[in-house]
Image (cartoon, rainbow, N blue to C red; front, side):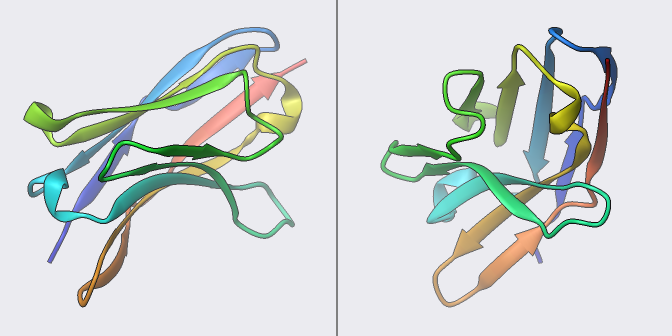
Amino acid sequence: QVKLVESGGGLVQAGGSLRLSCAASGSIFSFNYMGWYRQAPGKQRELVATIYNGGSIDYADSVRGRFTISRDNAKNTIYLLMNSLSPEDTAVYYCKSYRTAHGEYWGQGTQVTVSS
């Protein structure tokens, strides 16, 4: 069983920054990929950014150039640095991991609220 714990959410003014963390209970080397998703009230959960085991990265068009996903293998943690935040970024942010033959795991989510 993989446990993912997110942290770093909070309330920030528009234009501000936050850094989210997702700590995994095991080695993140074992995952095919890890990613950040978000879900705003009344909307479907959407992909924000993904980082693959080989190092490649994908971003949603809505966050490209503002958000940066990274990882620290020694700490079994991935991060999401969010700059130039806008009220449209308000959502619960979830961390996800995926491993072949084991499936996917989700964290409990962390709330990000951007005030105008």
